[in-house]
Length: 163
Image 1 (tube, rainbow, N blue to C red):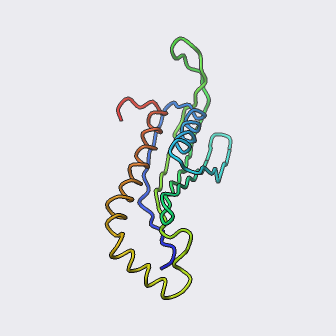
Image 2 (image 1 turned 90 degrees about the horizontal axis):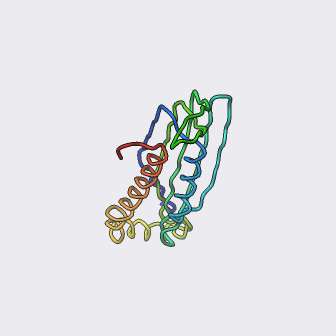
Image 3 (image 1 turned 30 degrees about the vertical axis):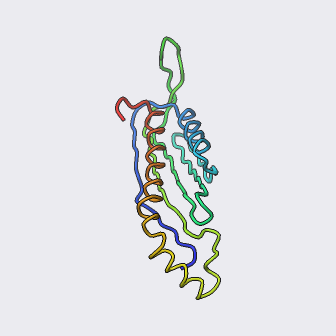
């Protein structure tokens, strides 16, 4: 078995309307930093009315499990417009923006048990009988809470009325 990676279904957030693209990116980066994730911007593709960004965050929970939250941001038909907010003119973007969030975790990310058949058998026993409940009832829930927290930050950055 050695390193075991578990990915969860993608969570989608879509918004059509006005948004502050730079503020959204800053808030997302701040969220990764505040929650102890090592932040990586793995892709930035810019076209005339489109942007595509891929962010990746990883966080060591213990010496055995590591959380990952992958985020892809895509914009379509993006234009910059001036609006008046609180009596001041500011520039915001309009168009379609989508967020794809994929939470995942890795067990034995340092590959301690993958060296031979005997260690893999011990790891299999360890997963099935010793930490099975902790994985399913604690770590997976914690990872979903982290992903939900990121979604809350995204929605707040988009200035949704209801959350």
